[in-house]
Amino acid sequence: MSAAARNQIDITLSLSGDTIAAVEVLPRGRLELAPLFSGKPTVSLLNALPRLFSLCAIAHQVAFLSAVEAARGEDINLATRQHRIVLVVAERLAELLRGLFVGHLALDFASMAAIRALMQDASVLVGSAAAGSDAFRREATGRVADKLAAFGLSNEGGALMPGSPLARRIAELDKLALKPMPTQHSFLSVADDRTIVEGAFVSDAGFFGCTGRQVHMPETGPWARHVTRNGLSPSRSGPAERMKARIDEIAQLCAWLKAGAHDEAAADGTVESYRLGPGRGAAAVECARGRLYHKIELDRYGKISRFEFLAPTEWNFHPRGPLVRSLQGAVLTAERHGQAAVRAMIASFDPCVAFTVSFGSTCDA
Image (tube, rainbow, N blue to C red; front, side, top):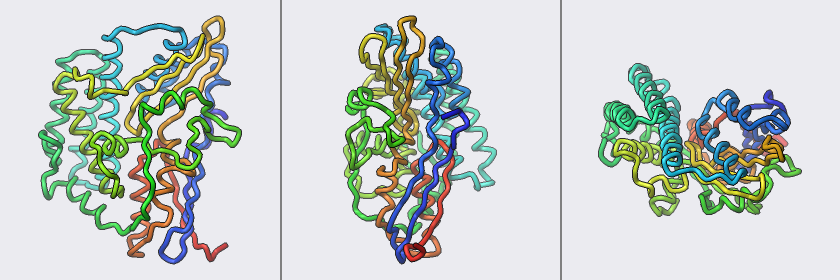
């Protein structure tokens, strides 16, 4: 599929009364890069990645580099590994901030100037991480933390000030009427990496069959990390809970970067690489929306023979994935807010492309 592949997700819900009877997801078209770069040097694709992926470009480059090094059997030193982890974490923080403020406060006109200033500081933070200056990075992180405090996010522990713009938005999401059915939750983690990278990312059915999880595709992203990290029972998983998880992670990442980014436990699994055989390697990177995978095969001249990648959106918006499980059987308890509640739930999974939502009735068939 060319770079002009269909780049949106279409979601169709069939209602039986006030209950969501069926959820159909038409995933975005897959971007097939191997035909474009086959036989070319690895640097050609490495340099093209920022143009191909406007979101999480650093994560893609780190995943690609790590996969290539694994394929070549190269080891990287600790300083390089730490630098890449800091880069990925800084970009993850910037993307989480973008999703939080642009996604939830875009219509808060009184906050627009403050949001623009915050996003500019987040961009500076990513640049400071790329420059490798600890002092510059800490200063930039401090400015981000100070601006977050103005939105009601405490520098200590991520608590929200009552009545702040973010607290008001969470209260609005809590009021949206969508009563989900109990569902099975499973989460993607570093423990799944080997199973995934040793399989094929693309199946004959037009998607991926790499995990053996034929019934339930796992969720990945901020809420999955929050539940796993804190050992929580995912009893509630609505948009408000997912927004709180994003805020909690933003506070933790700010604290980690500001403290010097030296705690290895805090970055566990952020960047992992796997040698799959001579000339074959893979890597996994924990980016804003979840776990990103790259896999590469090099020919005898060290040029690209095969290349595949698997983005977090493919998991969360799989036709048997966590979004479908969250919506299937849910009851719209207030008709006036029902569709808004559904859209809020979809947006809380933060796809990396646009999505459309359409509603129909089972009686229409």
